[in-house]
Amino acid sequence: MDGLENRLVYRGIDVGSLAEHSNYEEVAYLLLHGSLPSQPQLDEFKRKMAVNRRIPAGVVTLIGSLPHSAAPMDVLRTAVSAMAMFDRKADSRESLVQTAIELIAQAPTIVTTYHHIRNSRLSIEPDPRLGHAANFLFTLKGIEPDEQDARALDVCWVLHADHGLNASTFAARVTASAQSDMYAALTTAIGTLKGTIHGGANQKVMEMLLDIRDLNRVEEYLGNLLKHERKIPGFGHRIYKGEDPRVSYLRRLAETLCEKTRNMHWFELSNKLEETVIREKGLYPNMDFYSAPLYYALGIPVDMFTTMFACSRMAGWTGHIIEQYELNRLIRPLGDYVGSLKREYVPIENRK
Ligand code: COA
Image (tube, rainbow, N blue to C red):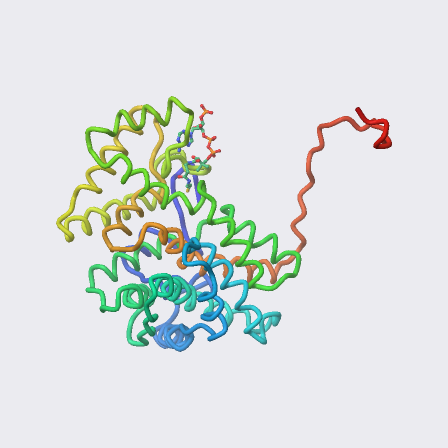
C-alpha cells in the first residue's frame, strides 16, 4: 500500500483492476501462491474450496452451546480456535496452503451456521455449484442470489482480502512468529479485527446511519459527535490521507444495490454524511464506510457486518502467516520505559 499515492496492490497487481476483472477465489489463490492461477489451477482451487465448506460436527455442537446473544465475531473467533482440535494436521508445516484453503472455505459456513442456530432454524448446506460469495448468500438466506448480488459481495470481498500490515494481520504475524499454529494466529487476528476502530467500524457505521435516519439530522448529529471529541466511524485512515483507493468501487456498488432494492435512502444519507465530514473535518471515508449501506442492501444483519470483513481477510491473513513461517524471526519489539530506574522495593507494611 502507498499512502501518498493512495494506492493498493496485491502481489503487484492494482486492487482496482482485480475488483473490475477478477473474483474472490482468484484473488485468494494470488495471495496464497504469489501469482494468478491458470484455468486448471483455478478450477482445482475452487474444487478444493467447494469440498471443504462443511465444518466438523463437533464445532456445530459447540456453536449450538453458545448463548444466542453472542456477537457473531466472538462466535467466529471461538469456532476457528476450536477447529484446531478437529484438524490432525493443525501443526504441520507441509499442509499450510491446504489448511488455509479449508479455513477460507469454512469461515462463511461458521457465520451462517451460527445465524441459523441463534434464530432456532436448521442451517443450510453449502451448494458446491456456487462461487464463494454466492454460496455465502445462499447459506444465509436459503435462496440462490441473483448475479448482481453475488457479484457485489464478491467484489467487496476482493477489496477486503488484504491490506499490508494492518492491526489484525500484524497480530497474526506476531503469533505465527512465535511458531504457534495457523489456527492460533487466525484467532488472534479475528479478535483484533473485531475492534471498533479496525474491522468493527463497519457495524458502527450502520448503527450511526440508523441512528441519524433523517437527511436533515446529519449536521446536528455530526456536530454532537465532534463536540464530544468522538471519532466518526468509517472516516480517517492511518495510511491514506486522501481517499482510500477501495472507496470508489464500494460507493458505486452501494449505489447500484440501493437502486436495485428501490431504497436510495441509506445511500443518500451516506453521501450527505461523506460531503459534510469532508467539508467540516477534511477527513475522507475509509473502506468500512460504504461497505455498511452495501451489506445492508444485501440483507446481511448489521451485527454480522464485521464477519464479512473477516471472511474475506482470511485469504490475506493466511497468506501473511505462511510468509511469516517461511521467513521467520520472532517479532519482539522493545518498549520504551520512561519511568524512574531508581526505585527501591518497599515491604508492604511500610507502604503508604
Ligand atoms: N473522526 C473524527 N476525527 C478523526 C477521525 C474520525 N473518524 N479520524 C481521525 N480523526 C482526527 C484525529 O482526532 C486527529 O485529530 P487531532 O490531530 O486534532 O488530534 C486527526 O484526525 C488525525 O488522526 P490520527 O490520530 O492521526 O489518526 P490515527 O491514524 O491515529 O487513526 C483511525 C486512524 C482509523 C484509527 C481513525 O481515523 C479512526 O478511529 N477512525 C474511525 C474508525 C474507523 O473508521 N476505523 C476503520 C479504519 S480502516
